[in-house]
Length: 304
Ligand code: BG6
Image 1: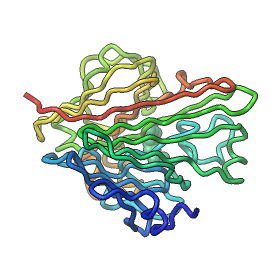
Image 2: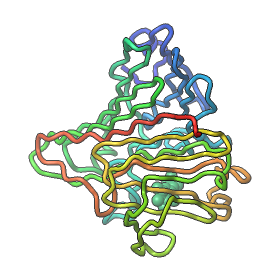
Image 3: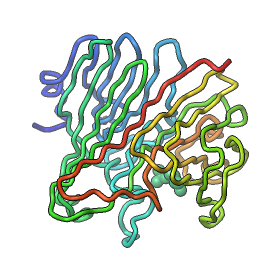
């Protein structure tokens, strides 16, 4: 089945009160989820969770209003999936940064309504010759998404070949915040990180992460929950994770955001990326027959 054939998708996978498929921004096929807990939109390109808004809350994910929604272009916002490498490819600079998973088509494999009212979706990356040329390993990858009072995303990588491979990956999540000056990220205190703004120099995090200039850091060897305390919105976003040893914190700040062209004026002030990752020193080795699952669970709490 053509994975972007909307009527076939609706016949097979729509669930009243939970999910239907439609044409989204830029003509991209999307799953539109609306249940008693939350609303969400997921593009089939990249299995890209673009929005998640629990009822009674402002959006939790940041999505650029100036982004390009077009086939083969990564969406600026939401939860881009970096896979099977993070950042530039280790040996071939001509390959796309952060891998190809975020810009190729995925197929819907399953949808379901859960007893608690949440909606479940399972996507599989569609293998093509172009992908095999970039990733010469036998593997399959799926994204499991649960849209409810929490947003749960799990990226499963199976090694179906006879040799081990190394995997870099991330949920490159963009969070919507009131203003970057009014938030702090906790959970990384005392953690070692590589500072990409200063030539990958190795540093130790002192106190909470506050942002007042370009920040691009890969925190290593940490499985800790991260908390984004947003005084402006009086809420705390919690990012819990499993099988992730790196956390990336990124805000491009004024000059870089302007150069990137899809943030919009001062767009960087309303976002921060806190990425659930396995990157650099923390790449994962997946042995033949093994399965590796990267999990992030995002929830919102009132900030006292
Ligand atoms: C971050 C990287 O994860 O993603 C940054 O650490 C990078 O170096 C940023 O600039 C955005 O990447 P992209 O490819 O989505 O523009």
